[in-house]
Image 1 (cartoon, helix red, strand yellow):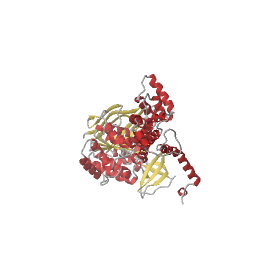
Image 2 (cartoon, rainbow over the protein chains, first blue to last red; image 1 turned 60 degrees about the vertical axis):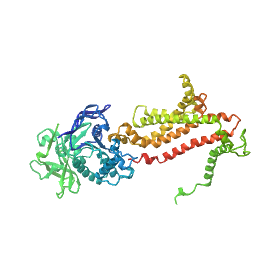
Image 3 (tube, rainbow over the protein chains, first blue to last red; image 1 turned 90 degrees about the vertical axis):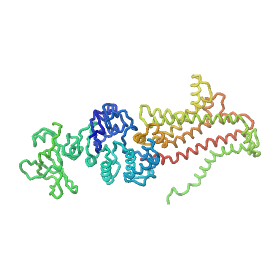
Length: 331
Length: 270
C-alpha cells in the first residue's frame, strides 16, 4: 500500500514551545486516519503541516512520495475542511464550492456543473444561490466539505469538523463522512479530541500528547492494548493499574490496563479480590460501578439485569489474566 | 405601551432644533451671499439677488487653477493613503509583532495632533532635507492625515474578516495575489472606498497643513482665505464655498452609505 503522507522526525517548535516534536507517521493511501489528542497536543499543528500553513522546523514531510516542506499550500493536492468552515461570506454557495476551480481557470459552465455535482454529493442540492449566512451550521459544514472535494484532492484534511454540531447531527455526519470516504477512496485525515468519534470512524488512530505520537494503531488495538497510561486513560475509561497492584495479582511489576467490562463480580473464593462499592451509575444498557480495590479505584461495567450491589457493600471481583493488558511503561 | 415609543418632551425638541439651527444657519448665510448684488461688503439683508456671480466665477482662471490643484492634491494623497493605510492595517491586524500597538497609535497620532503642529513639523523637515515646496510637499502633508482615515476604516474591517478565510483561499489553490483579489478585496472593498472618500474630503478643504507645506501654489481653501481679505467680487468666494461644500459633502454621504450595512458584507461567514 502506498504512503499518502509521511512524517519523518518532524518537529514544529514555536520558540520554546514544542508543538510537534520529532513525530514519525505514515498515513496510507485511502485510509481514514484520525489524529486524536487533548487540546494542545500537536494534532492540529500536524494537520496544518500537511496543509502547508505551517513549515516544519526540522524533519522531512512527503506527500505521495514527494518532498513537501517547501511547497506552498496552493500547490499541494490537499484540501482542508476548517473547524469554523471558513466559507467566503461574499460569495454564494455555488461560488464558494467552485472557488478552487475558479482560481485554476476552469470555465464557468464546467465549474457550475462540478459545484452542483459536489453539492449533490454532500446532499445539499439546490442550495447554490444561498449565502453562507443563510445556512445552518450543519449545512455550512456540508458546503465546506463540497468546496474541498470539488478539487478532487488526494488527501482531505478535516479539522474537528463535527465539533460545532449538536449530538444528533454529529452522529449522522459521522456515518456520512465514513460512507463518503469509502465511496470516494480519498485519504481522509481527521483531527479530533473525541475518542468516541475517532474509534467509530477511523481505520487507524494516532494518539497525540505533548507534541509526540504516543501510539498508532487500529481502533481495536488502541482500545484493547494501549501502550501507555496516557493512551489507556485518554482513549477510554480503562482502569489503569499501578505496578505494585499488578505485581501482587499477576506477578509482573508493570503498569497495566483493564477494560471495565472485563471486571466481573464473583463470590468469595481463590483468586477473588476484595473490593468495596463506592458508586453506581445506571446507564440504560449497563450499570457502571466504581469500586475501591486495595486503595485503587477500579471501574466495572455490569450488564443490565445483573443484581447491582448497594454503595458501601463489600464485594469480590475477578478478571481473566488475558484481559489485563501489560503496558510498555515499566514500574 | 412602550415608553420609548412616546415622543420626546417639548423642551428637548426645541433644544435639538436650536442646536441644528446653530450648526446650519451660518452655512445657509454663506449660500445666500452667493446670490447678493452687493460685492464689497456682506450687507444684510442682501439688497438684491442675482445669478451673475456664477458666471463671473466660471470665467475666473484663478478659481479654476485653485480648484484643479485641490482636486489633484486630494486625489493623489487619497491614492497614497489608500495604499499605505491598507498595507498598514493588514500588517497590524494580520500578524502579531513586538510594538504592534505602538505602531497603531503612531499611525493615528497625526489626526489627533493639531494641524499646526503637523504643519510646522513638516515644514522644518522639508527645510532640513532641502526639499523645495511644491505641489508634492502639499500632497505629502495631506497624506499624513489621510492615511489615518483609511487605516481606521480598513483595520476595523480586517478584524472582522476571519483569518481562516485567507488560509481557505490558499488551501483551495489561490496564490497571494488571487487571494487578495478574490477574498480580501471584496471583503474590505467598501471600507476602503469609504476611507478613501473621507480622506478626499479631508484633503480637499484642508488649510492649516497646506499653509505650511505649500510654496506659491494655492489650493481652493487657501485661495478663499486670500480672497476674503480682498474687497473685490466677494460673492465669488461664496459661490466657491458652495462648490466646496458639495464636493466634500457628497463623498462623505457616499462613505456613510457604503459602511452603513457593512455588517452584512463581512460578518456573515461565521
